[in-house]
Length: 279
Image (cartoon, rainbow, N blue to C red):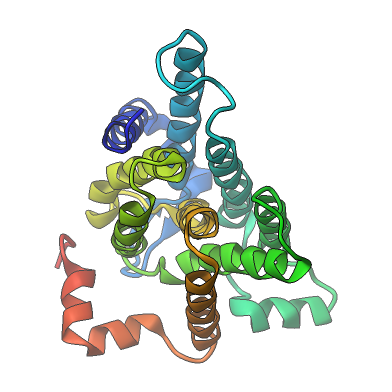
């Protein structure tokens, strides 16, 4: 399956799930208020995960019958699927069970110091564990490289969560970040593997922008993690180090500044952030 076809199939799969899964989004358990105090269903990123799962099942089945890659040929595909399911599950738990009272690393650590384990802390620890599993599946080099790559994946996932503060923001940033990865990956294994994920989130963008749903940490976690995984699998060591430094800086900065305030103060960022949104 080509990259373009993968994007299109992922897009169509999630659109079909949105149409047929309206009753799921209407469940009271998923109701949350957004930044404008509108009540919307959250955790809609689960539809992207289901879309990717369906597409992967289809690709594997067709490949077994000689239509496309044989199962097992593209080692990146099961890694991407595991990233979607692993990070998606952790995000879903936080979306549905989290109280939202303890935010950021410091908030979760304060809760831990007082004897409470938050869903956010579970997401952080679980995300780190998933990231280590993912990083260890590529060509192993050294323990330091494994640590660096795992941190890169985990921080990319967390950055997705941090950016998910306005309609469509994290998906637009994710699609923008995917472009250079797509150029580097081309039609290779990694480019093909992540294509349905990109298509699925692109399919959620119209509803996200129009404030009909929120992808929640379920979606933001996954999109960030998959892009981080793509960097680990496809981009050279030196460039990965630069990306890791940038991710560390952004995650640390988020503890002391508001990304939304910074975006509102910078005209090009503000214009990009509001593109397609309701005024």
